[in-house]
Length: 331
Ligand SMILES: O=C(O)CCC(=O)C(=O)O
Ligand SMILES: [Fe+2]
Image 1 (cartoon, rainbow, N blue to C red):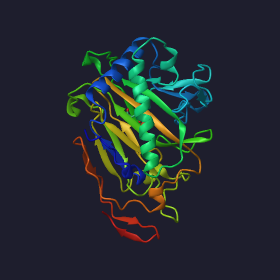
Image 2: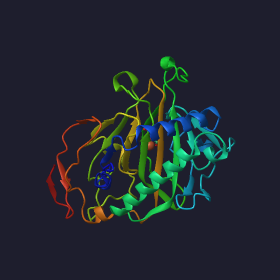
Image 3: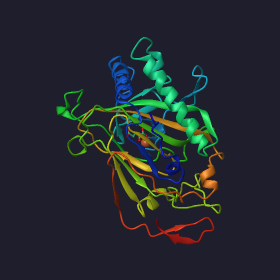
Image 4: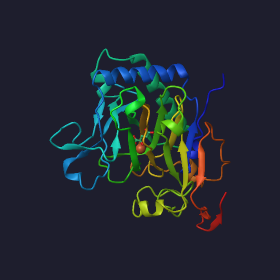
């Protein structure tokens, strides 16, 4: 059987790579059942986004920083700076409503719960993806990464743990530039674990991505034509311009990859229980330029999109800059 391969070049140029049926139905369902067992055992942290108390007003994303090496799989590298301590953290359920289970920590602490083999298989898949990304030019990805199960409750009538409020995650970047620590999120990974027959019209729960291929999220390229990942000024204002909206149906087995700093995204309210794995490949600050970006990127053929995603233009994308800074026509 030909392996299903994600289009990494899309990630390198700030686009979103979507691969349907990346996981077989059996693997997706084993992982979902593992996550379901962990949820039942209380391994998930419920509700909103965990924020340091003194950051409540700013509602800035300050994610938990539980990481572990894909190679070692034993030692844990915890840089969360507040983590589980209820005296220093609070929950912001206006930004996000979903339950989270850290695969390297929360799940591991629940020995004997769920399907360890399925989880180990997931780590192999993720490790292969890291190899693939590096083979395609993302040379400097750390062996440490973050990996979580996500569970978004359905609305009242989903018959599957509904709380009366459907889950969601408001518009955000996974990497904002405010994070502490030596490692930064470089590539975001999503693997959907939902049951068959997701109907976006009635179930909602789509991942909406705001894409500006080849431009970086602040619309600026440096002199070499690379994204400037460290310039986070004006991002929100610029994100409104020249943006291409991509709605992705969270079908079981689907893989989504994107540049954590370049692609703003949100999860639309879901009426149906929604399961996912989310992960971040990390890089040391300053080591995040890919071969593709060094070569200029953005010239590859737009790869076929699988899974029936809907792409709509929010206004024309008129100009792009090439490596020498001159404008060229849009694709
Ligand atoms: O559940 C999803 O589709 C996206 C989750 C997400 O954006 C995140 O955890 O940062
Ligand atoms: Fe995200």
